[in-house]
Amino acid sequence: MGSLAALTLADARFPGGGHVHSGGLEEAVARGLVTSVSDLRPFLAGRLRTTGLVGAAFAAAAVVAATGMGAQWAALDAELDARTPAAAQRDASRAQGRATLRAARLAWPSPVLDDLCAVARHPHHALLVGAVVGVDGGSPAEAAQVVGYLAVSGPASAAVRLLGLDPFAVNAAIVALRPVLDAVVTQALHTSALPPERLPAPGAPVLDLMAQAHVHHHREQVRLFVS
Amino acid sequence: MSADHGHGHGHSLDPTVTEPDPHHAAAPGGRAVRIGIGGPVGSGKTALVAALARTLGPQMRLGVVTNDIYTTEDADFLRRAGVLTPDRIEAVQTGCCPHTAIRDDITANLDAVELLEERFGDLDLVLVESGGDNLTAVFSRGLIDRQIFVVDVAGGDKVPRKGGPGVTTADLLVINKLDLAPYVGADMGVMTADAHRMRGELPVITQSLVRDPAATDVASWVQQQIAAVRAPVG
Image 1 (cartoon, rainbow over the protein chains, first blue to last red):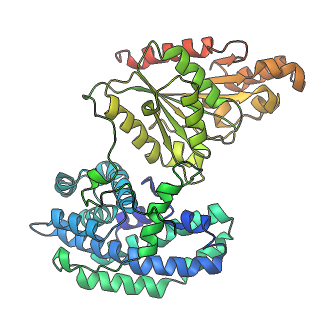
Image 2 (image 1 turned 90 degrees about the horizontal axis):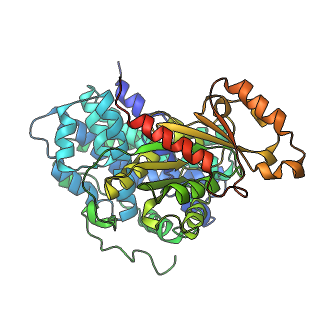
Image 3 (image 1 turned 180 degrees about the horizontal axis):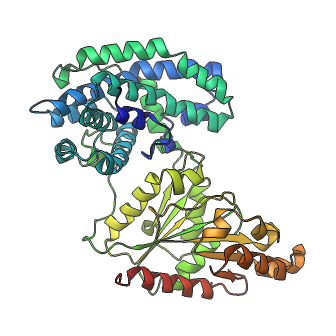
């Protein structure tokens, strides 16, 4: 039986604040970089291989930390910060972590959450997902799959809302990413027991720059998504 | 790419440094009473918030959360109205789904309310103004203590009879822009009778902010609700 926590956390109706984040999609749309489903596909694939892999790897490592002895939450927190160079993306990650924590305190209360929060009052989303899946008895692969999936499902949903794209075509585009998602989960699983500093660190500089630009350029203009 | 990327941030990896709240935190105090204000686009929600802030602001410690599209414009409207200092207004983005942000996933709004409470500590009242939405949009009881649904005369005198959770379940229904009734051919008798029929015992207030910029009746209702929420249980 799979982890119910993993299923819950990946559900778009989970009240974790995810619906106000577009993962850079709103900025890409504002710049005319994404206008159709065919533009969306490479955007999602690129995000999954970079931001998605980082999150998935840290979620998998967080499951190992949550279920073992001497969890290195401080190191995981710091290393994930180091892999998230845009302040706007760190804020977005911690805002969703804070929201997930609010839900997790009620649904999956555990000293593991207390330990994580002792290190970071607003933990990164990926670490919270890993901790909760671990508390629920789920596996590192399940946590990695949740975070990898959310890395593309959130922007895809934002694209439907911002561009009026055909939701069936967008759903098919997400499902078509399965080979990429599987590869991300496999890599996250392989590195889940490594020390935090050795976890994967791919970068997506344009996403980083766009995340910052989104905050700066839209501060005085209409902005529908937080990130 | 423009040249200003990254400016304004010190690139510290300490998350508390990257986007610091520029305001000093106040000492922890009692939780503010939270009142949600919802209703269709253009029904006068922001004008009501401004009127309440003008009337209640001098008597109590007030914060306002605004939601959604044109969020900056709404916040600017309140700031220009001179009724609240900018640090007492928090604007949230709702990802194109104003009803989701007040009902299904209230995270962004809860964060904004808690930010105001952390900043001031001793607020009496936080008004949460939703983005303009349809007649089914109501606030989660996890976000607010009481809710006001605002419709307006110019939106059509058949609106109350259409019902929907906003009209039927809100703690107070406000029928706004009473002064426009003669110009749009709205029958106020029908409108208020429908409203009372749909709502049973729940109150209905008709008002015109042109005639009464202080929103006297709604302000009194709000004060009663604050007292009721704060009254010891049992």
